Amino acid sequence: MTRPTLDVIRVFLDDPNREFYGLELRAATGLGNGTLYPRLAQLEGYGWLESRWEYAASDERAGRPPRRYYHLTREGALQARAAAERAGRTKRAGRTRRGSGLRGSGLRTEPEPGPQGA
Amino acid sequence: MDRLIAPLLDRLAGRLGANDLALVQRAYARAAERHEGRFRHSGAPYITHPVEVASLVAAAGGDPATVCAALLHDTLDETAFDAGRLRAEFGGDVSELVTGLAELKDGVPEAADDRVLLLRLSDRLHNMRTVEYLAPHKQRQKSLQTLETFVPLARRLGLAPVAAELESIARKRLAPGPEFAALRTLALILPAQARGRYLREWAAELAALPTGHRAYVLELLRGVPALAVVLWRPRARRLTRTLLTTVLASRARPWLALAPPLTWLTYQLARTSLADALAFVLSVPPALSALITGARRRLGLERDDDTPHD
Image (cartoon, rainbow over all chains, first blue to last red; front, side, top):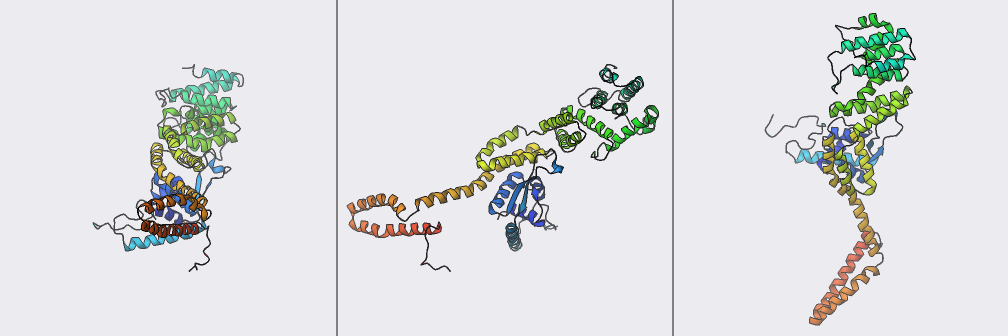
C-alpha cells in the first residue's frame, strides 16, 4: 500500500462515519488532486470506499452543483484499519527517513525528530 | 449631473406625490455630494452605483423610503455623516433602512425587514452587473456567494427575473475555463461510464473553489493517466478472463488450435531426427495439457475433485 493511499484511508479512519468530498480530502491529506483521485478510484475498486452524489434537494447547496461524497464501507473500515496498522508497524520498525508516513497530511500528532536532531 | 437621476424621477413621477419626489431628489443630491471624487472599479463616478440600485428598487416596486435609502446606502460614516444626521435630514424610516443595510452588509440575509433585503439584493445585482472589473478571485467569491445566498433570496422575495439574472451572471463567472476543456479532452482516455462522473465531480469542486482554479485543473491533468490505469485495470482483467474462458471453454477447444502447429513441428523434427520428434511428442503435449488444465481450474471451468483442498 502506497503512502498516498495510506494518507487517504487515515483521514477516513479518523472519523469513520463521516462523508468527505474531494476538496475536503485534498485539504486533509495535503495530496494534489492528481494523486488523490486515482487513489480514491482504487479504494472504490477495492470496495473499501463508496461514493454518491449530494442529494439534489438539499437546501444548503442552493445553486451549487452537487458534490460527490465518499464514505468508508463497513468492510473498508475493517480492511483499512488493518492496513494502517500494518503500515504503522513497518514504519516504526524500519523507516528512519525524515518525514515518512504522514508528511503534509495534517494528521501527525507529534513532531518526528529529524536526523539532524532538534 | 441631474441627468443621472432624471430617468429614475421620470419612472417614479407617475407613482409618487410631489413630496416624495422631492425627498428622492434631495437624497440624490446628498449622495452625489457625499460620493464626490469617488469612483467605482469600472472607473465610473461612484454615484452611478446608488442611482442604479435605486432604479432597481423602484423597478421592484420599492416604496419612496426604500428608494431614498438605496440612494443613500453607502453614505454613512462615523464622523462626517452619521445615522443621526441621516435621520435629521431624511427621517427615521430612511435612516433605519440605511443602518439596517449597513448592519447586514456582510452577514447572511436571513431574518431582516423585506425592504432591507430588497436593498441588499439590488445592491448585489448592480455589483454583479459590474463584477468583471474585480480581480478574478473576487469574481469567483462574489459569484459563489450570489448562487448560495442571493439567488434563493431573490426567489423568496418573488423576484424571479432578478434571480434569473443573478444566476446567469454568476454561472458565467464560474464556468470552467479553457484548462477545463483540455481536461475534458484528456478525460477521453477514461472508461466511458466513469468519464461523465469524474468531469461532473471536478466541475462541482471547481465551482466551490474561490481561488487556485488553474492550478487545480493542471494538477488534475497530471493525474488523469493514473486514474485511467486504475479504472481500466479491472475491465482489462475481465476482458482477459472472458477471452480465456471462451478459448478454454472445453478441453478439446484449445487443442483444435494447437494440433496443427504441433503436428507441423513434429513432422519437421521427424524429417531430421525421429528421436527428437519422439521426445517432442512425449514432452510438449503433456506439458501443454497440464497448463490448460491448470488454467481451466483457475477459471473455475474444471472441478478438481481428486485434488483435495487443504
